[in-house]
Length: 405
Image 1 (cartoon, rainbow, N blue to C red):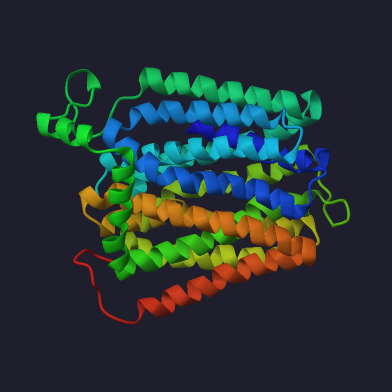
Image 2: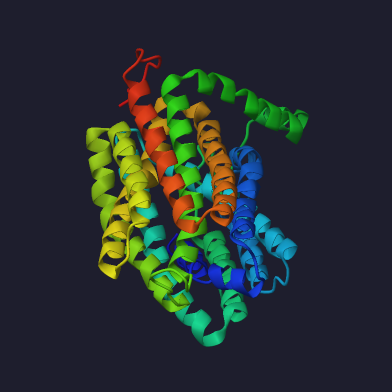
């Protein structure tokens, strides 16, 4: 995850220059971000089915190959449609990667230590994203955008080779050599079940999950978080910081340092806040994180100096740490083990709907009004959703036998 985070981080400061090279509008850049979310949305259910059927390890390898190919292709994209195709490939790969990685962690953890078990993985990813932006910005300024994306693609390929060589399978039905072993009944059921039937069955499992008020409300809030995250951080923030008509007008290298600073906060705060989450409960942490992120997004529009920008982005990063593991750990605790894969798939799918909606709408809104106005809208969405989540939690009883704290 350290290498994956580094590669992802290297892309961040370069994307505004892809926008400039292809003469894209803010709305079109929003479509590029949304293409990633759309692909993840399509890939979540198949990924959950395939990872349950074939195990975690294969998709920790195949997914990185898809992400690497798509990322390398971005550097060679000469038009919007080519850029969208590459982002779709990356999104499908990330859907498989996130599903297999998350289920690997849940396989080896318990409700009492799930957040703190996930934290080192998230910390490694955050450490990579701390290193990546600075490196990506420097490389883009020195060797060019195309060569930088090619290097990132090769790095993902190397990461896939490492996963295939050193990782072991964690799925419960494991025997000699780490290979998945199925009973004759399992084999017969899989032979008779088509992929479409498996997808239909998986979606059918979502209905009872959504009847659980705690699961449903957490999924709605998480979706609104992704509306704000995709709109504010993924789409608007890099444009806001690099726009020559706005106060900061940063270069790729400087933008990389900003994102590196945000990631360093996540690295340093990940483990302590995960331990705190396991002690005080996931729900209070989710509420606090959502409020902090929403408020920080709104405050960012008022920043005019580097000092106020640093303070606001630091606060934003702290909120992001709160939300890095708590929603998945919370939903995982609320369901039985057999429902966990589809509960996580449902959470991710609804989050990807938020990503799709957020990037598209804020990009269009920025073209109609301004980047600052669209940024304030993104923060307002999350603050409103957080207020609703708190209010809804005070109404009605606990409709689940597990602890909903």
